[in-house]
Structures are given as structure tokens and as C-alpha cells.
Length: 113
Image (tube, rainbow, N blue to C red):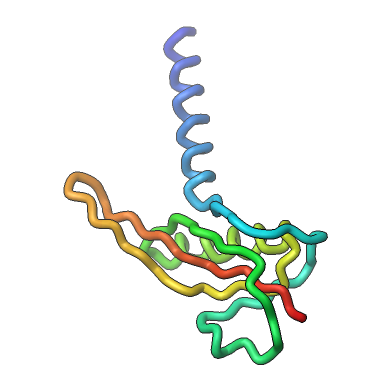
């Protein structure tokens, strides 16, 4: 009984850790929540006037599925803080000698004027 309890706790901890991997760290202003968010990969692609209302850093992996989860997470957080768009501005790679490399995405959250 004690062993199965330990296994269940370990599995739950692992699941929560995996879920939090893609949780964005947000720093910025908050507005009423929005429903639609536009994605951009360069500030020059944004054709409307806007202001940057905040910044996010999000951990990601190198696989397509990992990047999709990261993109979805950024969009959901942007809706939550009232942004109209995200600019995926930069990818950073931290090389680790004993584990896999860590990647983070820098995201600018924008509000249209």
C-alpha cells in the first residue's frame, strides 16, 4: 500500500512538472481579458499601431510538438492579460553538459492602439 502511494505521488509530481514546463513567466501590465490574439514573428510584420504591454519568457523544447505547446501557452497567457498580439522575438539556448539543452522563447505582448 505504501509503495503504491509513493508511485502515485511520483506520477502526479511528474505530470505537474511537465505541465509547468510551458508556463510563461509574464512581466507587464494587465487589461481585461481578450478572446483573439494574433501571432507575429517580427515586429515589422505588425501593420497596426501598437504598444508593448509586457514580456514573457517560456521554456520550450526543440521538437515541433513542444514548440506548439509553447505557442499555445503564450497565446493563452496573452488572452489572460488582455493582449491583442504576441511577437515571438527571440529563442535562447542554454547548453548543459550533463542534461539536454534548455531553450527559452522571449515573447513581447502587444496591445493595438
